[in-house]
Image (cartoon, rainbow, N blue to C red; front, side, top):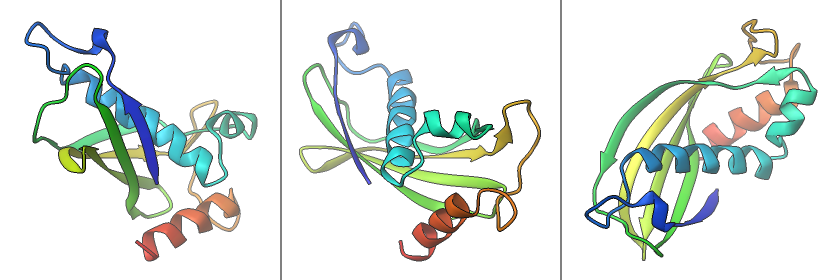
Length: 137
Protein backbone atom coordinates (compact mmCIF):
# COMPACT_ATOMS: atom_id res chain seq x y z
CA UNK A 1 0.00 0.00 0.00
CA UNK A 2 1.41 3.33 -1.00
CA UNK A 3 2.16 6.41 1.05
CA UNK A 4 3.88 9.61 -0.09
CA UNK A 5 6.22 11.77 1.96
CA UNK A 6 7.75 15.08 0.87
CA UNK A 7 11.22 15.56 2.37
CA UNK A 8 11.28 18.68 4.55
CA UNK A 9 14.28 20.97 4.99
CA UNK A 10 14.53 20.22 8.72
CA UNK A 11 14.90 16.50 7.91
CA UNK A 12 18.24 17.10 6.20
CA UNK A 13 21.71 17.25 7.70
CA UNK A 14 24.66 19.60 7.11
CA UNK A 15 25.49 17.69 3.91
CA UNK A 16 21.99 18.36 2.52
CA UNK A 17 20.92 14.71 2.70
CA UNK A 18 18.03 13.34 4.72
CA UNK A 19 19.28 12.31 8.16
CA UNK A 20 19.03 8.54 8.57
CA UNK A 21 16.78 8.79 11.64
CA UNK A 22 13.97 10.22 9.52
CA UNK A 23 13.55 7.02 7.52
CA UNK A 24 12.35 5.32 10.71
CA UNK A 25 9.85 8.13 11.27
CA UNK A 26 8.62 7.70 7.70
CA UNK A 27 8.22 3.97 8.32
CA UNK A 28 5.90 4.83 11.21
CA UNK A 29 3.94 7.36 9.15
CA UNK A 30 3.49 4.75 6.42
CA UNK A 31 2.56 2.04 8.95
CA UNK A 32 -0.22 4.19 10.43
CA UNK A 33 -1.43 5.00 6.90
CA UNK A 34 -1.30 1.27 6.02
CA UNK A 35 -3.57 0.38 8.94
CA UNK A 36 -5.97 3.19 7.98
CA UNK A 37 -6.13 1.95 4.38
CA UNK A 38 -6.97 -1.60 5.46
CA UNK A 39 -9.80 -0.26 7.60
CA UNK A 40 -8.14 -0.06 11.01
CA UNK A 41 -7.28 3.55 11.70
CA UNK A 42 -4.84 3.70 14.61
CA UNK A 43 -7.21 5.90 16.60
CA UNK A 44 -9.83 3.17 16.20
CA UNK A 45 -7.31 0.67 17.62
CA UNK A 46 -7.15 2.70 20.79
CA UNK A 47 -10.94 3.00 21.00
CA UNK A 48 -11.06 -0.81 20.85
CA UNK A 49 -8.49 -0.99 23.66
CA UNK A 50 -5.65 -2.10 21.38
CA UNK A 51 -2.19 -0.74 20.62
CA UNK A 52 0.53 -2.06 18.32
CA UNK A 53 4.00 -1.00 19.47
CA UNK A 54 7.14 -1.55 17.43
CA UNK A 55 9.30 -4.22 19.04
CA UNK A 56 12.01 -4.46 16.40
CA UNK A 57 13.55 -2.88 13.33
CA UNK A 58 15.43 -5.17 10.96
CA UNK A 59 17.24 -5.24 7.64
CA UNK A 60 17.51 -1.46 7.31
CA UNK A 61 19.28 -0.68 4.03
CA UNK A 62 20.05 2.91 3.06
CA UNK A 63 20.69 2.58 -0.68
CA UNK A 64 20.64 6.13 -2.04
CA UNK A 65 20.22 9.56 -0.45
CA UNK A 66 17.20 11.81 -0.54
CA UNK A 67 17.23 15.58 -0.20
CA UNK A 68 14.94 18.51 0.56
CA UNK A 69 11.90 18.58 -1.73
CA UNK A 70 12.13 14.96 -2.88
CA UNK A 71 8.86 13.06 -3.04
CA UNK A 72 9.30 9.63 -1.48
CA UNK A 73 6.92 6.81 -2.38
CA UNK A 74 6.68 4.29 0.45
CA UNK A 75 5.20 0.85 -0.14
CA UNK A 76 4.19 -1.17 2.92
CA UNK A 77 3.50 -4.89 2.74
CA UNK A 78 2.95 -7.71 5.20
CA UNK A 79 6.13 -9.79 5.27
CA UNK A 80 5.12 -12.12 8.11
CA UNK A 81 2.26 -12.50 10.56
CA UNK A 82 1.67 -15.19 13.17
CA UNK A 83 -1.19 -13.78 15.30
CA UNK A 84 1.35 -12.37 17.77
CA UNK A 85 3.91 -10.45 15.71
CA UNK A 86 3.37 -8.55 12.47
CA UNK A 87 6.44 -7.96 10.30
CA UNK A 88 5.91 -5.15 7.84
CA UNK A 89 8.27 -4.49 4.93
CA UNK A 90 8.92 -0.96 3.66
CA UNK A 91 10.32 0.00 0.29
CA UNK A 92 11.00 3.69 -0.30
CA UNK A 93 11.50 5.02 -3.80
CA UNK A 94 12.52 8.35 -5.25
CA UNK A 95 11.70 8.76 -8.95
CA UNK A 96 11.10 5.01 -9.17
CA UNK A 97 14.52 4.10 -7.71
CA UNK A 98 14.70 2.22 -4.40
CA UNK A 99 16.52 4.37 -1.84
CA UNK A 100 15.66 2.49 1.36
CA UNK A 101 14.31 -0.87 2.49
CA UNK A 102 13.58 -2.20 5.93
CA UNK A 103 11.28 -4.17 8.19
CA UNK A 104 9.47 -3.42 11.42
CA UNK A 105 8.10 -5.92 13.89
CA UNK A 106 5.11 -5.00 16.02
CA UNK A 107 2.98 -6.88 18.48
CA UNK A 108 -0.52 -6.23 19.76
CA UNK A 109 -1.28 -5.21 23.34
CA UNK A 110 -4.29 -4.05 25.27
CA UNK A 111 -4.04 -0.43 26.33
CA UNK A 112 -3.14 -1.66 29.83
CA UNK A 113 -0.14 -3.56 28.42
CA UNK A 114 -1.36 -7.17 28.19
CA UNK A 115 -0.29 -9.26 25.17
CA UNK A 116 -3.03 -10.03 22.66
CA UNK A 117 -3.03 -13.14 20.50
CA UNK A 118 -5.08 -12.13 17.48
CA UNK A 119 -7.59 -14.59 16.05
CA UNK A 120 -11.19 -15.72 16.06
CA UNK A 121 -11.68 -14.72 19.71
CA UNK A 122 -9.95 -11.33 19.63
CA UNK A 123 -10.11 -8.87 16.73
CA UNK A 124 -11.06 -11.45 14.06
CA UNK A 125 -11.54 -8.81 11.34
CA UNK A 126 -8.00 -7.44 11.64
CA UNK A 127 -6.59 -10.94 12.06
CA UNK A 128 -8.17 -12.16 8.80
CA UNK A 129 -7.21 -9.00 6.93
CA UNK A 130 -3.53 -9.41 7.90
CA UNK A 131 -3.59 -13.13 7.04
CA UNK A 132 -5.14 -12.36 3.64
CA UNK A 133 -2.53 -9.67 2.90
CA UNK A 134 0.26 -12.12 3.80
CA UNK A 135 -1.18 -14.91 1.65
CA UNK A 136 -1.85 -12.64 -1.32
CA UNK A 137 1.42 -10.75 -1.41
